[in-house]
Length: 268
Image (cartoon, rainbow, N blue to C red; front, side, top):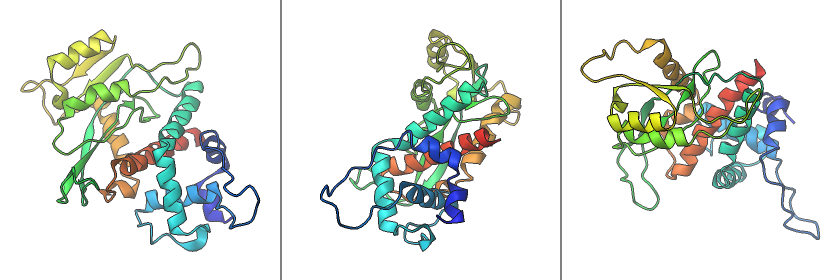
């Protein structure tokens, strides 16, 4: 195993990844055939593609598996929603250590350019925008709790309910699992009374900027938290522009970026 594989997939991350990866299926019980590529080498290659932004064909041979093998493994794991499960396992580890602050969260979105349309022609081949939205925990950890993507013409307000409902039950240092913050901060894109009523029904206090009253230049120290988290997601260069035709593949790279942020917190 090369030093690059060990650097991209440390032992701590590999132990957590083995908890979510499905067991290897023996295709040829009688033996023979080509040896299956290792999951750790494929994971390191996928992380390299995500962080460097290179294409699959540009994947260097130092990892061992060829790029078609790595891509097939990535596609299979994406269909199995493995990246979301890995993100949840990392959140559970952070929650068990008491490093998640549930007193307040923030929600925001960012638009990026998409250069390809969907394979089923439901989206145009013209450049479009994909949207990433994430409530981010307040405090020194600034960890993404829920992420999603949508079309370019989707208003920000339509993403609040799915994202809040998408927060998984996360372990706490003591007591039951939690999935709702005490307070949610948002900008003027979420300034609607029905969203305030919906948050109150779920026992979540809201702090949403009001149109025509509050200045957009003064985000406040709580809403700037999510801005920094979005910039950390942009550290995954594969998210600078959407090249994937399948939405599940782009969402997989979003999950990989969030998992790497959580693992970086655990390693601190």
